[in-house]
Amino acid sequence: MLSAIEIKRVQLSKSTPAKRKSQFGQFFTPESTAVFMASLFPDGNGNCRLLDAGAGIGSLSAAFLARWRSGGFQFQAVELDAFELDHELIRHLSNTLTSFNHSSDLEVNIREADFIKAAVDSLSANLFSVPLKGYTHAILNPPYKKINSNSAHRSLLRQVGIETVNLYSAFVALAVAMVAPGGHVVAIIPRSFCNGPYYRPFREFIAKRTSIRHVHLFESRNKAFKDDDVLQENVIIHLECGAEQGSVTVSTSTDDTFSDLATHEHPFDRIVFSGDSERFIHIPTSPEKFTFDASTTVRYTLENMGLKVSTGPVVDFRLKPHLRDMPDSGTVPLLYPCHFSGYKTTWPLIESKKPNAVERNAETEKWLYPNGFYCVVRRFSSKEEKRRIAASVVDPKTFGDTAVLGFENHLNVFHENKKGIPEPLAWGLAVFLNTTAVDERFRRFNGHTQVNATDLRTMLYPSREELIELGKWAMSQAELSQSVIDEKVDLMT
Image (cartoon, rainbow, N blue to C red):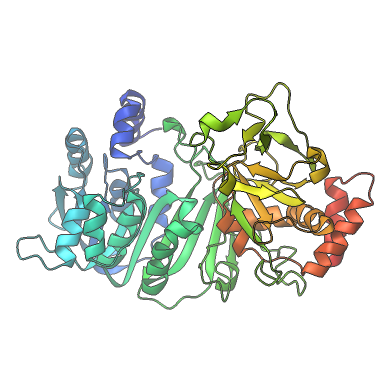
């Protein structure tokens, strides 16, 4: 039977216009998820100071207080600060929290205020601010919205040493800054912070101030906030402030019913690899080690091999006057992801909606690469595809005697100083990248469908010589099925 809070959440999720949801970047937490999040906090005693930033209608606070009222915590008293900026939600939030406020051991403070400004003022010791430091617990479903580099929020965050690109990571960082040593933060947030250069300062901030205790992954991309049609892959993370890092509990469930909950313990070096300057966060979903975890072969960087990977330099809308549907005099091939299927290149595509060529002239010359062999990887995959990484080989013979090629921005290109690479090396890279083992390892730290050049740059590979041998083998095969390449690479490692 649904609680009154859950009924209200479903009603508001259905009735709130999508434009308003986007404006505030807030999606209400389902009751089952809120209860699970509250269960991640260890038992406590003494007095609790609880922060709920972006409280919405109070689902998270309600789950925490319900656990306390039912004897799950041993707190003598709880003081709650619930921040919510949306005026239309304040009465619902008040109704939720009033139902728990029936004795003197609970103090509820509903703050209709900008959490970022209030937190920064408090951390900066602004004489006119309300002091907020010293929370023992924080539970958050923060807003999901980008922060522009020149925005007021970005400027405020920099005042307290926080550099980040999204409201959700800003809220978590501020909560961590305000929770006392030994305190706990539990948040449900997009998985995008686990990798990529934009979230590196946030990962470093978290690493310096907390230990990761628990990570929960929803295996189905659209189930955490299914009532709101949110397709972002989300995780629940439990952080302990000021504590030494130990092993990490990783749990998974298909959706927010948690009916198939599976839990495993992992040493921290399986979550953040030793020596990884990017501090990518991997989320292993089984206790078994992946194929490459203990490999003595897959340990080389692209730099070790004299290779680079770059995003395709041709941004089509910027060069629109120079694009041509089909090749003609004075044009050169322009390659999009649609020109690649499996390992092969098909060009031109007669019925393609994308142009097949770009004029070669003074304005386009600097964006073109010499014709040659390359390995390319699509930057975007659909969530239905079996693999996130799809690699192909560019064969110069496909384009006749053309001197240069254009690679569109939705491709990642492996090259040697913007020139082609040996044919066997291109094939070896493509085969290696298309293995199941690479895909599984990539999914451990990448929660979205985008494959960035940075992701490929930070991966480890077999040596150049081993990739060339793998390429020569691949070129001699009549068929390169998934099972065939997986077996071959397994033997190498």
